[in-house]
Image 1 (cartoon, rainbow, N blue to C red):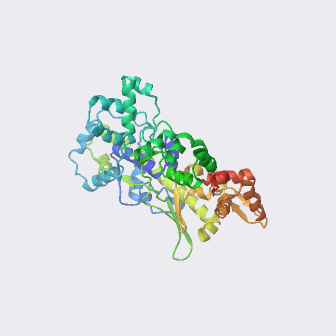
Image 2: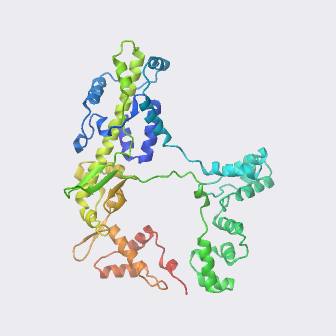
Image 3: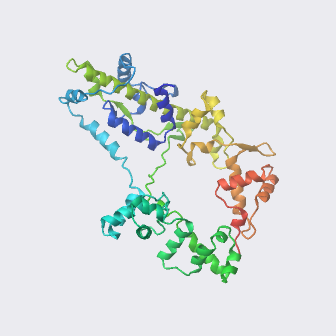
Length: 468
Protein backbone atom coordinates (compact mmCIF):
# COMPACT_ATOMS: atom_id res chain seq x y z
CA UNK A 1 0.00 0.00 0.00
CA UNK A 2 1.42 3.38 -1.02
CA UNK A 3 1.74 6.27 1.46
CA UNK A 4 -0.99 8.09 -0.48
CA UNK A 5 -3.39 5.14 -0.15
CA UNK A 6 -2.60 4.79 3.54
CA UNK A 7 -3.29 8.48 4.12
CA UNK A 8 -6.59 8.23 2.23
CA UNK A 9 -7.72 5.32 4.44
CA UNK A 10 -6.75 7.18 7.59
CA UNK A 11 -8.61 10.31 6.50
CA UNK A 12 -11.68 8.26 5.60
CA UNK A 13 -11.87 6.92 9.15
CA UNK A 14 -11.11 10.15 11.00
CA UNK A 15 -13.74 12.18 12.82
CA UNK A 16 -14.25 15.84 12.00
CA UNK A 17 -12.10 16.85 14.99
CA UNK A 18 -9.29 14.47 14.03
CA UNK A 19 -9.43 15.71 10.46
CA UNK A 20 -9.21 19.32 11.61
CA UNK A 21 -6.16 18.46 13.70
CA UNK A 22 -4.53 16.79 10.69
CA UNK A 23 -5.26 19.81 8.50
CA UNK A 24 -3.90 22.13 11.18
CA UNK A 25 -0.60 20.28 11.03
CA UNK A 26 -0.54 20.36 7.23
CA UNK A 27 -1.29 24.09 7.16
CA UNK A 28 1.54 24.74 9.59
CA UNK A 29 4.17 22.92 7.52
CA UNK A 30 2.94 23.37 3.96
CA UNK A 31 2.84 26.96 2.65
CA UNK A 32 1.20 25.74 -0.57
CA UNK A 33 -2.02 24.96 1.34
CA UNK A 34 -4.51 27.63 2.28
CA UNK A 35 -8.04 27.74 3.61
CA UNK A 36 -10.42 28.77 0.83
CA UNK A 37 -13.89 30.27 0.67
CA UNK A 38 -14.95 28.03 -2.23
CA UNK A 39 -16.14 24.43 -2.03
CA UNK A 40 -13.80 21.52 -1.49
CA UNK A 41 -14.96 19.84 -4.66
CA UNK A 42 -13.46 22.70 -6.70
CA UNK A 43 -9.96 22.23 -5.34
CA UNK A 44 -8.87 18.69 -6.13
CA UNK A 45 -9.40 18.24 -9.85
CA UNK A 46 -13.06 17.30 -9.25
CA UNK A 47 -12.50 14.19 -7.10
CA UNK A 48 -16.28 14.00 -6.61
CA UNK A 49 -17.11 13.61 -10.29
CA UNK A 50 -18.48 10.08 -9.84
CA UNK A 51 -20.99 11.30 -7.28
CA UNK A 52 -22.15 14.19 -9.43
CA UNK A 53 -21.17 16.80 -6.85
CA UNK A 54 -19.78 20.20 -7.74
CA UNK A 55 -18.02 21.53 -10.81
CA UNK A 56 -14.34 21.29 -11.69
CA UNK A 57 -12.03 24.21 -11.22
CA UNK A 58 -10.25 23.71 -14.52
CA UNK A 59 -7.45 26.17 -13.84
CA UNK A 60 -6.33 24.41 -10.65
CA UNK A 61 -6.79 20.96 -12.18
CA UNK A 62 -4.60 21.93 -15.12
CA UNK A 63 -1.92 23.28 -12.81
CA UNK A 64 -1.90 20.12 -10.74
CA UNK A 65 -1.72 17.88 -13.80
CA UNK A 66 1.07 19.95 -15.37
CA UNK A 67 3.33 19.63 -12.35
CA UNK A 68 2.51 15.96 -11.68
CA UNK A 69 5.13 14.89 -14.23
CA UNK A 70 7.88 16.81 -12.49
CA UNK A 71 7.07 15.70 -8.93
CA UNK A 72 9.94 14.12 -7.04
CA UNK A 73 9.54 10.44 -6.17
CA UNK A 74 10.29 11.02 -2.51
CA UNK A 75 9.75 14.24 -0.56
CA UNK A 76 13.05 15.35 0.94
CA UNK A 77 13.54 18.09 3.48
CA UNK A 78 15.45 21.05 2.04
CA UNK A 79 18.27 21.98 4.34
CA UNK A 80 18.31 25.66 3.43
CA UNK A 81 14.67 26.69 3.64
CA UNK A 82 16.01 30.20 4.06
CA UNK A 83 16.22 30.20 0.26
CA UNK A 84 12.44 29.77 0.16
CA UNK A 85 11.84 32.50 2.73
CA UNK A 86 14.18 34.86 0.87
CA UNK A 87 12.34 34.24 -2.37
CA UNK A 88 9.06 35.19 -0.69
CA UNK A 89 10.41 38.36 0.87
CA UNK A 90 9.59 40.56 -2.07
CA UNK A 91 6.13 39.12 -2.69
CA UNK A 92 2.85 40.84 -1.86
CA UNK A 93 1.35 39.82 1.47
CA UNK A 94 -2.01 38.05 1.10
CA UNK A 95 -3.82 39.38 4.16
CA UNK A 96 -7.08 37.50 3.47
CA UNK A 97 -5.32 34.13 3.16
CA UNK A 98 -3.37 34.67 6.36
CA UNK A 99 -6.52 35.75 8.20
CA UNK A 100 -8.32 32.56 7.14
CA UNK A 101 -5.33 30.52 8.30
CA UNK A 102 -5.22 32.28 11.71
CA UNK A 103 -8.96 31.88 12.16
CA UNK A 104 -8.73 28.13 11.55
CA UNK A 105 -5.84 27.71 14.01
CA UNK A 106 -7.61 29.78 16.68
CA UNK A 107 -10.76 27.68 16.39
CA UNK A 108 -8.85 24.61 17.62
CA UNK A 109 -7.62 25.85 20.99
CA UNK A 110 -7.05 23.08 23.54
CA UNK A 111 -8.64 22.67 26.96
CA UNK A 112 -6.70 22.62 30.23
CA UNK A 113 -6.10 19.15 31.68
CA UNK A 114 -7.49 17.92 35.00
CA UNK A 115 -4.05 18.27 36.59
CA UNK A 116 -3.63 21.83 35.29
CA UNK A 117 -6.98 22.92 36.71
CA UNK A 118 -6.23 21.35 40.09
CA UNK A 119 -2.77 22.92 40.10
CA UNK A 120 -4.36 26.36 39.87
CA UNK A 121 -6.29 25.63 43.08
CA UNK A 122 -3.27 24.07 44.72
CA UNK A 123 -1.19 27.23 44.62
CA UNK A 124 -3.65 29.09 46.82
CA UNK A 125 -4.07 26.17 49.24
CA UNK A 126 -0.34 25.73 49.96
CA UNK A 127 0.39 29.46 49.54
CA UNK A 128 2.78 28.68 46.70
CA UNK A 129 5.25 26.98 49.03
CA UNK A 130 7.79 25.35 46.63
CA UNK A 131 8.18 22.20 48.73
CA UNK A 132 4.47 21.44 49.04
CA UNK A 133 3.81 22.42 45.45
CA UNK A 134 6.37 19.79 44.40
CA UNK A 135 4.98 17.03 46.65
CA UNK A 136 1.33 17.74 45.83
CA UNK A 137 2.16 17.88 42.13
CA UNK A 138 3.48 14.33 42.47
CA UNK A 139 0.03 13.36 43.76
CA UNK A 140 -1.71 15.16 40.89
CA UNK A 141 0.47 13.29 38.42
CA UNK A 142 -0.97 10.00 39.69
CA UNK A 143 -4.65 10.88 39.20
CA UNK A 144 -6.63 9.23 36.42
CA UNK A 145 -9.22 11.09 34.34
CA UNK A 146 -11.96 10.26 36.85
CA UNK A 147 -9.92 11.85 39.65
CA UNK A 148 -8.92 8.63 41.41
CA UNK A 149 -5.45 8.26 42.92
CA UNK A 150 -3.57 5.43 41.23
CA UNK A 151 -0.53 5.33 43.53
CA UNK A 152 0.02 4.31 47.15
CA UNK A 153 1.37 6.70 49.79
CA UNK A 154 4.66 4.80 49.58
CA UNK A 155 4.85 5.30 45.80
CA UNK A 156 4.25 9.02 46.20
CA UNK A 157 6.89 9.28 48.94
CA UNK A 158 9.43 7.55 46.68
CA UNK A 159 8.47 9.59 43.63
CA UNK A 160 8.76 12.91 45.44
CA UNK A 161 11.67 11.79 47.63
CA UNK A 162 9.89 12.79 50.86
CA UNK A 163 8.83 11.08 54.07
CA UNK A 164 5.73 8.89 54.19
CA UNK A 165 4.08 11.38 56.55
CA UNK A 166 4.56 14.24 54.08
CA UNK A 167 3.25 12.09 51.24
CA UNK A 168 0.10 11.36 53.27
CA UNK A 169 -0.30 15.05 54.07
CA UNK A 170 0.01 15.91 50.37
CA UNK A 171 -2.74 13.40 49.55
CA UNK A 172 -4.96 15.05 52.17
CA UNK A 173 -4.27 18.46 50.61
CA UNK A 174 -5.28 17.20 47.16
CA UNK A 175 -8.42 15.62 48.63
CA UNK A 176 -9.38 19.05 49.96
CA UNK A 177 -9.55 20.51 46.44
CA UNK A 178 -12.71 20.97 44.40
CA UNK A 179 -14.69 19.03 43.44
CA UNK A 180 -15.07 16.85 46.51
CA UNK A 181 -13.97 13.26 45.92
CA UNK A 182 -10.78 14.13 44.04
CA UNK A 183 -7.82 12.01 45.17
CA UNK A 184 -9.88 9.07 46.43
CA UNK A 185 -8.46 5.59 46.00
CA UNK A 186 -11.77 3.80 45.46
CA UNK A 187 -15.50 4.44 45.13
CA UNK A 188 -16.17 4.11 48.84
CA UNK A 189 -13.59 6.76 49.75
CA UNK A 190 -14.78 8.99 46.90
CA UNK A 191 -18.37 9.01 48.18
CA UNK A 192 -17.30 9.42 51.80
CA UNK A 193 -15.17 12.44 50.90
CA UNK A 194 -18.21 14.06 49.32
CA UNK A 195 -20.44 13.32 52.31
CA UNK A 196 -17.73 14.58 54.66
CA UNK A 197 -17.46 17.85 52.71
CA UNK A 198 -21.16 18.34 53.47
CA UNK A 199 -20.74 17.38 57.14
CA UNK A 200 -22.85 14.23 56.81
CA UNK A 201 -20.67 11.94 58.93
CA UNK A 202 -22.85 9.58 60.96
CA UNK A 203 -25.87 9.90 58.66
CA UNK A 204 -27.67 6.88 57.26
CA UNK A 205 -26.14 7.63 53.87
CA UNK A 206 -22.69 7.66 55.48
CA UNK A 207 -23.25 4.31 57.20
CA UNK A 208 -24.51 2.70 53.98
CA UNK A 209 -21.46 3.84 51.99
CA UNK A 210 -19.04 3.06 54.81
CA UNK A 211 -20.29 -0.41 55.74
CA UNK A 212 -22.92 -1.68 53.29
CA UNK A 213 -21.92 -0.62 49.79
CA UNK A 214 -22.34 -4.17 48.45
CA UNK A 215 -25.95 -4.37 49.67
CA UNK A 216 -26.63 -1.01 48.03
CA UNK A 217 -25.17 -2.21 44.72
CA UNK A 218 -27.50 -5.24 44.84
CA UNK A 219 -30.56 -3.13 45.73
CA UNK A 220 -31.04 -4.98 49.03
CA UNK A 221 -32.88 -2.14 50.70
CA UNK A 222 -34.92 -4.23 53.18
CA UNK A 223 -31.70 -5.89 54.40
CA UNK A 224 -30.12 -2.45 54.77
CA UNK A 225 -33.04 -1.22 56.85
CA UNK A 226 -32.75 -4.27 59.09
CA UNK A 227 -28.97 -3.98 59.46
CA UNK A 228 -29.14 -0.27 60.32
CA UNK A 229 -32.29 -0.65 62.43
CA UNK A 230 -34.12 2.10 60.58
CA UNK A 231 -37.30 2.39 58.53
CA UNK A 232 -37.25 1.37 54.85
CA UNK A 233 -38.36 4.90 53.91
CA UNK A 234 -35.26 6.31 55.63
CA UNK A 235 -33.03 3.95 53.66
CA UNK A 236 -34.75 4.95 50.42
CA UNK A 237 -34.17 8.62 51.23
CA UNK A 238 -30.50 7.93 51.99
CA UNK A 239 -30.11 6.00 48.75
CA UNK A 240 -31.44 8.96 46.79
CA UNK A 241 -28.84 11.14 48.52
CA UNK A 242 -26.06 8.72 47.59
CA UNK A 243 -27.23 8.62 43.99
CA UNK A 244 -26.84 12.39 43.83
CA UNK A 245 -23.09 12.06 44.51
CA UNK A 246 -20.55 11.98 41.69
CA UNK A 247 -18.65 8.67 41.34
CA UNK A 248 -16.24 10.25 38.81
CA UNK A 249 -15.51 13.77 40.13
CA UNK A 250 -12.50 14.26 37.87
CA UNK A 251 -14.68 14.27 34.78
CA UNK A 252 -16.06 17.64 35.85
CA UNK A 253 -12.60 19.14 35.30
CA UNK A 254 -10.99 16.76 32.82
CA UNK A 255 -9.92 18.09 29.45
CA UNK A 256 -12.60 16.29 27.52
CA UNK A 257 -12.87 18.20 24.25
CA UNK A 258 -16.33 19.44 23.39
CA UNK A 259 -17.11 17.22 20.45
CA UNK A 260 -19.93 19.05 18.76
CA UNK A 261 -21.80 16.49 16.73
CA UNK A 262 -21.87 17.84 13.21
CA UNK A 263 -23.57 15.79 10.48
CA UNK A 264 -21.41 14.75 7.54
CA UNK A 265 -24.50 14.41 5.36
CA UNK A 266 -28.05 15.74 5.38
CA UNK A 267 -30.93 13.62 4.07
CA UNK A 268 -34.09 15.61 3.33
CA UNK A 269 -36.90 15.99 0.85
CA UNK A 270 -36.40 18.50 -1.95
CA UNK A 271 -39.03 20.91 -3.22
CA UNK A 272 -40.17 18.23 -5.66
CA UNK A 273 -40.81 15.81 -2.79
CA UNK A 274 -37.93 13.53 -3.75
CA UNK A 275 -35.24 12.49 -1.31
CA UNK A 276 -31.92 14.26 -1.65
CA UNK A 277 -28.52 13.98 0.01
CA UNK A 278 -26.51 17.11 0.73
CA UNK A 279 -22.97 16.97 2.07
CA UNK A 280 -22.31 19.38 4.92
CA UNK A 281 -19.77 21.87 3.55
CA UNK A 282 -18.64 22.81 7.04
CA UNK A 283 -17.48 19.42 8.31
CA UNK A 284 -13.99 20.07 6.96
CA UNK A 285 -12.13 23.24 6.03
CA UNK A 286 -11.99 23.82 2.29
CA UNK A 287 -8.42 23.81 1.08
CA UNK A 288 -6.74 25.10 -2.04
CA UNK A 289 -3.36 25.94 -3.51
CA UNK A 290 -1.80 29.30 -2.69
CA UNK A 291 -1.67 30.80 -6.17
CA UNK A 292 1.15 33.20 -5.32
CA UNK A 293 3.45 30.22 -4.66
CA UNK A 294 2.30 28.35 -7.76
CA UNK A 295 3.19 31.42 -9.83
CA UNK A 296 6.75 31.26 -8.49
CA UNK A 297 7.34 28.15 -10.60
CA UNK A 298 7.23 30.41 -13.69
CA UNK A 299 9.59 33.02 -12.28
CA UNK A 300 13.13 32.84 -13.76
CA UNK A 301 14.53 34.60 -10.70
CA UNK A 302 13.42 31.80 -8.34
CA UNK A 303 16.16 29.24 -7.71
CA UNK A 304 15.88 25.57 -8.64
CA UNK A 305 16.01 24.58 -4.96
CA UNK A 306 13.01 26.74 -4.12
CA UNK A 307 11.06 25.44 -7.13
CA UNK A 308 11.78 21.88 -6.04
CA UNK A 309 10.52 22.72 -2.55
CA UNK A 310 7.32 24.16 -4.04
CA UNK A 311 6.76 21.08 -6.24
CA UNK A 312 7.18 18.74 -3.28
CA UNK A 313 4.76 20.71 -1.14
CA UNK A 314 2.32 20.89 -4.04
CA UNK A 315 2.41 17.09 -4.35
CA UNK A 316 1.66 16.77 -0.64
CA UNK A 317 -1.19 19.29 -0.91
CA UNK A 318 -2.72 17.48 -3.88
CA UNK A 319 -2.60 14.13 -2.07
CA UNK A 320 -4.39 15.61 0.92
CA UNK A 321 -7.07 17.34 -1.17
CA UNK A 322 -7.74 14.21 -3.22
CA UNK A 323 -8.07 12.15 -0.02
CA UNK A 324 -10.57 14.68 1.34
CA UNK A 325 -12.54 14.47 -1.89
CA UNK A 326 -12.59 10.66 -1.80
CA UNK A 327 -13.76 10.77 1.81
CA UNK A 328 -16.64 13.06 0.94
CA UNK A 329 -17.62 11.01 -2.10
CA UNK A 330 -17.65 7.70 -0.18
CA UNK A 331 -19.76 9.08 2.66
CA UNK A 332 -22.24 10.57 0.21
CA UNK A 333 -22.63 7.29 -1.69
CA UNK A 334 -23.31 5.47 1.59
CA UNK A 335 -25.94 8.07 2.48
CA UNK A 336 -27.71 7.41 -0.83
CA UNK A 337 -27.83 3.68 -0.04
CA UNK A 338 -29.44 4.53 3.29
CA UNK A 339 -32.08 6.53 1.43
CA UNK A 340 -32.83 3.47 -0.70
CA UNK A 341 -32.73 0.84 2.05
CA UNK A 342 -34.16 2.78 4.99
CA UNK A 343 -36.85 4.88 3.34
CA UNK A 344 -39.51 3.59 5.75
CA UNK A 345 -37.49 4.97 8.65
CA UNK A 346 -36.94 8.29 6.87
CA UNK A 347 -40.69 8.61 6.26
CA UNK A 348 -42.10 7.28 9.54
CA UNK A 349 -39.26 7.31 12.06
CA UNK A 350 -38.59 5.05 15.05
CA UNK A 351 -39.67 1.45 14.77
CA UNK A 352 -39.35 1.33 10.99
CA UNK A 353 -35.63 0.67 10.76
CA UNK A 354 -35.00 -2.40 8.61
CA UNK A 355 -32.17 -4.92 8.98
CA UNK A 356 -29.10 -3.77 7.05
CA UNK A 357 -25.47 -4.89 7.19
CA UNK A 358 -22.27 -3.21 6.06
CA UNK A 359 -21.64 -6.15 3.76
CA UNK A 360 -24.87 -5.39 1.88
CA UNK A 361 -23.83 -1.75 1.43
CA UNK A 362 -20.32 -2.78 0.39
CA UNK A 363 -21.72 -5.09 -2.30
CA UNK A 364 -24.08 -2.35 -3.49
CA UNK A 365 -21.23 0.15 -3.87
CA UNK A 366 -18.62 -2.42 -4.99
CA UNK A 367 -16.37 -1.49 -2.08
CA UNK A 368 -14.71 -3.57 0.62
CA UNK A 369 -16.69 -4.02 3.84
CA UNK A 370 -13.81 -2.53 5.85
CA UNK A 371 -14.04 0.62 3.72
CA UNK A 372 -17.68 1.03 4.73
CA UNK A 373 -16.76 0.46 8.37
CA UNK A 374 -14.05 3.13 8.22
CA UNK A 375 -16.30 5.58 6.41
CA UNK A 376 -19.15 5.44 8.95
CA UNK A 377 -17.00 5.32 12.11
CA UNK A 378 -18.01 8.12 14.51
CA UNK A 379 -19.88 10.02 11.80
CA UNK A 380 -23.43 11.35 11.79
CA UNK A 381 -26.23 12.06 9.36
CA UNK A 382 -29.11 14.53 9.73
CA UNK A 383 -32.55 13.10 8.88
CA UNK A 384 -36.12 14.41 9.10
CA UNK A 385 -36.34 12.59 12.45
CA UNK A 386 -33.16 13.95 13.98
CA UNK A 387 -29.42 13.42 14.06
CA UNK A 388 -28.21 9.80 14.01
CA UNK A 389 -24.91 7.98 13.90
CA UNK A 390 -24.37 6.27 10.56
CA UNK A 391 -23.92 3.04 12.50
CA UNK A 392 -27.49 3.40 13.80
CA UNK A 393 -28.70 2.28 10.38
CA UNK A 394 -26.66 -0.94 10.37
CA UNK A 395 -28.36 -3.59 12.42
CA UNK A 396 -29.23 -7.26 12.48
CA UNK A 397 -32.87 -8.18 12.35
CA UNK A 398 -35.75 -10.52 13.05
CA UNK A 399 -38.81 -11.59 11.13
CA UNK A 400 -42.16 -11.67 12.85
CA UNK A 401 -44.71 -14.43 12.35
CA UNK A 402 -46.51 -12.28 9.78
CA UNK A 403 -43.32 -11.80 7.74
CA UNK A 404 -42.45 -8.26 8.89
CA UNK A 405 -38.70 -7.58 9.09
CA UNK A 406 -37.64 -5.82 12.28
CA UNK A 407 -34.20 -4.50 13.17
CA UNK A 408 -32.50 -5.12 16.50
CA UNK A 409 -33.15 -1.43 17.26
CA UNK A 410 -36.87 -2.08 16.92
CA UNK A 411 -36.61 -5.09 19.25
CA UNK A 412 -34.76 -2.95 21.81
CA UNK A 413 -37.54 -0.37 21.63
CA UNK A 414 -40.12 -3.09 22.31
CA UNK A 415 -38.10 -4.36 25.29
CA UNK A 416 -37.79 -0.84 26.70
CA UNK A 417 -41.52 -0.28 26.23
CA UNK A 418 -42.39 -3.49 28.10
CA UNK A 419 -40.11 -2.53 30.98
CA UNK A 420 -41.56 0.98 31.10
CA UNK A 421 -45.03 -0.53 31.62
CA UNK A 422 -44.04 -3.17 34.19
CA UNK A 423 -45.20 -3.21 37.80
CA UNK A 424 -42.33 -1.62 39.68
CA UNK A 425 -42.64 -3.90 42.68
CA UNK A 426 -42.62 -6.97 40.38
CA UNK A 427 -40.35 -6.13 37.43
CA UNK A 428 -40.26 -8.40 34.40
CA UNK A 429 -37.51 -10.99 34.20
CA UNK A 430 -35.62 -11.45 30.94
CA UNK A 431 -37.42 -14.74 30.36
CA UNK A 432 -40.81 -13.09 30.91
CA UNK A 433 -39.91 -10.38 28.38
CA UNK A 434 -38.91 -13.08 25.87
CA UNK A 435 -42.28 -14.79 26.46
CA UNK A 436 -44.17 -11.53 25.86
CA UNK A 437 -42.25 -10.92 22.63
CA UNK A 438 -43.08 -14.46 21.51
CA UNK A 439 -46.79 -13.67 21.96
CA UNK A 440 -46.25 -10.85 19.44
CA UNK A 441 -44.73 -13.32 16.98
CA UNK A 442 -41.09 -12.48 17.72
CA UNK A 443 -38.79 -15.31 18.75
CA UNK A 444 -35.99 -13.75 20.81
CA UNK A 445 -33.87 -15.83 23.18
CA UNK A 446 -33.64 -14.87 26.87
CA UNK A 447 -29.89 -14.27 26.53
CA UNK A 448 -30.54 -11.92 23.62
CA UNK A 449 -33.11 -10.03 25.69
CA UNK A 450 -30.52 -9.66 28.46
CA UNK A 451 -27.92 -8.46 25.97
CA UNK A 452 -30.24 -5.85 24.43
CA UNK A 453 -31.42 -4.70 27.86
CA UNK A 454 -27.84 -4.16 29.00
CA UNK A 455 -26.98 -2.33 25.77
CA UNK A 456 -29.84 0.05 26.52
CA UNK A 457 -28.45 0.65 30.01
CA UNK A 458 -31.42 -0.98 31.75
CA UNK A 459 -30.52 -2.88 34.95
CA UNK A 460 -31.67 -6.42 35.73
CA UNK A 461 -35.06 -7.05 37.30
CA UNK A 462 -33.60 -7.43 40.80
CA UNK A 463 -32.10 -3.95 40.56
CA UNK A 464 -35.27 -2.40 39.10
CA UNK A 465 -37.47 -3.61 41.93
CA UNK A 466 -38.96 -0.79 44.00
CA UNK A 467 -39.42 -1.84 47.62
CA UNK A 468 -42.46 -0.71 49.54
